[in-house]
Length: 126
Image (cartoon, rainbow, N blue to C red; front, side, top):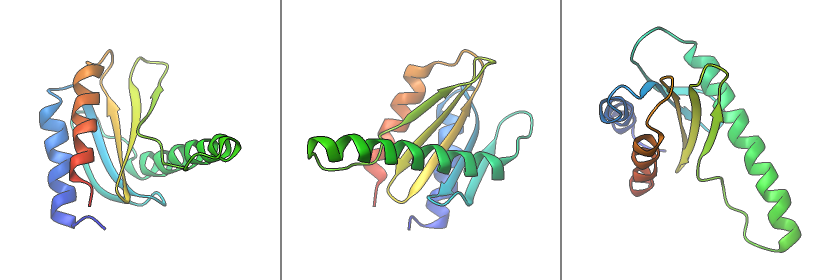
């Protein structure tokens, strides 16, 4: 598992790097337990966010496995899952190693910047 200090720094660096486009970062275990949180703005239920992120990631992974088993390809986890919420914010879940990076964006975010920051996390995989 990724080290605790590294996880906390990762959450903080995402908030800073996103320049107000990410309001909440929850780093969670694959089974939905929050390991670190960083909140910019109004409070949210980070336990629920971690659980939802794990459920979304698990369901998407199962769907990919179902499709890949039909084609005989190697089953891989999703690169990123982006759910658009009714108010224009996005819940983005990014598996990195054995943790999930769950982010809640601001309304009408700069998705290019956010996706770039999240894709860069693939380099930190251990």
